[in-house]
Amino acid sequence: MTTRTTKRPAGEPTWMDLATPDLEVAKKFYGEIFGWSFVDTGPDFAHYHFAQSQGRNAAGIGPIWPPDSGQPSAWTIYIASDDAAADAERVKALGGQVLVEPMAIADSGVMAVCADPTGPVFGLWQAINHIGSGVENEHGAMTWSEVNTRDSAAARDFYSTLSNATPHKMEEVDYYYIVQRGDDMLYGILQMDHHWEGIPPHWMGYFAVDNTDATIERAIAAGGKLQVPAFDMQYGRMAVLSDPAGANFSIVQPPAA
Image (tube, rainbow, N blue to C red; front, side, top):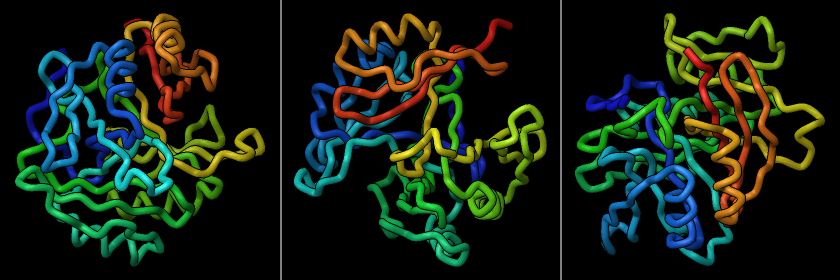
């Protein structure tokens, strides 16, 4: 098991949560494909649920609020912050937008929701008692995140400054940057081309799985859809799925050691 008990350094993806129109449908779907159990935080927090893997927080699931907002169902990726208020101001100074100003979530932490200058929406999370994901790089846990954008140069400059990190262009893929701090790979930036016609810029989160093809079968049987069929890369066997409400996410089976 890969358990984490300390908060992540500022600039690293630390949490993912889902806004969905139907909590029960979402819980059933993700429980079947990832084996998650769920903890309801109660009415004071709009019944936000912690999705857990063997007792460790893996992700969050909450209702779209307000229900009539017209917001689509989607996963949001949160970047760790030591000072969400200061980082929100940095987002503005770097040409981004702050969609939800920094707000305290009881004694869990401080969150903000932002958009980079090229459009993708992401969160900031300043941890207090909730460190973010407590499990990583195993079945049903966060393992990678990337920004899909139509202006990778602008996104590269924005995120490398925000995360105090260095972008490296992948030699074998000329449309992809990896944002790094030393040898630590934080997340990717992908240049969208004509193959992405009609798809808005967005952040994409990846969950690790034990078997990509078996997970696809379970997802389809549970009411999900296969958006990008399984394919192999040096980093593993990947696919893109959507849940019954249309929220997209990626899965990856790491290559054998």
